View 1 (cartoon, rainbow over the protein chains, first blue to last red):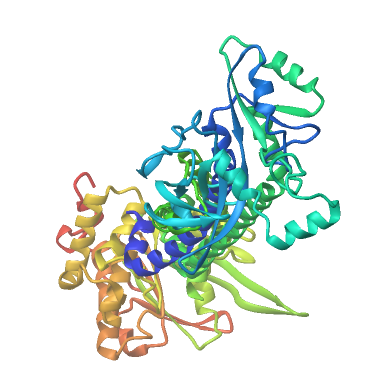
View 2: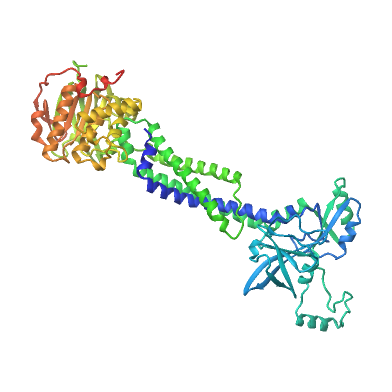
Length: 387
Length: 253
């Protein structure tokens, strides 16, 4: 006779509510782990998808994600001339806030070096890629604009021609792809007052800056993305670029390491710490539930001992209930996670390996919790049935 | 076993330390209870009735003397009684004032659990439990949980559970205290039947003198001592009768 299951069937509502409570805790722990994975995924999204072997950035800096980086606008031509380099693309990325239909929206403006890069590495859910050098944009759905919408960036209007999903930067802002030239133009926008102050400070007149502007402009190109010939030696090319002195060069692995282990290190540790705290809370709550369930059954346990039940019968009763609460809670937690997390503003990755790990954690916690119940049950004497 | 006592207490003593004083709950009790005998233990509150039952039921060891069940010395001062759980399961049945039924089990399951704990497979355990309940006029309550049963019905289920493993000693502590006189009488008649038909020794601790006529013997306790003994002649023994349920009547029993 399976006493644990019979008790649960008899008190089904209470069991379901208990499992739901545990399930919400498990969902929160899964969410924390998923948020951690999501942040890592988002941080590496561009690096993994853009398909560059090397990133040439400003000398002495570790840009463009870990630090600011501004390189000469002609750096791409210098890199292109190196033996073993198959293709180069300029890279610009800046955060942008803009007004649209009375709403203030945020996006991370990312430049595509059109026509070399039409964004064919970007997965579109609707629309098309860029087909002209100016005034077209591909937006992530999280930016909250749609195909055909015309948004004003800088001093120009841009038409949304394609929509992506899940393309965000490490802070969760949706990516808005335009051509590098457009991105540079948008980033260079100055107010009239800013121009006047700059002219007054330097004393130069119109066109004195030599680039058609009376105001000195920093380059907005953050990096040059380098694709190598399959036969090329990356270390040799990196060494050559480093010898120039005004440029630094990072491999894809370097960029990933900088993002994950430098820029996002504290955030990652913080999320994992919260996850650990949740697991501790979960352990306490499940232990308390099992302990209370055991306390409620002390009279029955005494009765079972009185009629000669072996310890294995009583242990089985406690372990079964702890296991059913653990499994039930885990099932509800995972179910809730799949239903709720897609509506969260940041990406929550529900990786099968993480879920398996969480299941093991819940099993261990339930096991520990049942030990507390078993310890208490073993102290019950048969004569307590008279109390 | 018919020639030797089922329960023997030899100079059983129980003393508790209470602060600086020692309370003597049981003071050198000696008695033998034979198969098929229904014995009533009477006495005022605090006379040691329940303590005697706890010691006889191997739930507490005596502080002096010894207890023999079926001729086997099973309890003495400082005896480790938890190890006697198997012995208790096979040889002693308990009935208390409260039925102590498991609330999430049906009447049938509450009886069958005692058999399953003793390694009887579920199917014959349920069949025998059903037969026991039918013999106690509870056929219509087999699938009911305790909360649907009256106090008398609950007590009869607890008696069915107590006799399920065919123990040769049944100990009952105030089994009729929570019942009205009619139900109380029915329960005492049931004990009489069990003692007579199953050849079990039945010891009933009670305040209720109304069913005294059913006992073979009565023992009056006061201050932990036997102060009066009445009777002493066993009712005629009858052979095991499968018509009134006995576990030996189970297939292979």
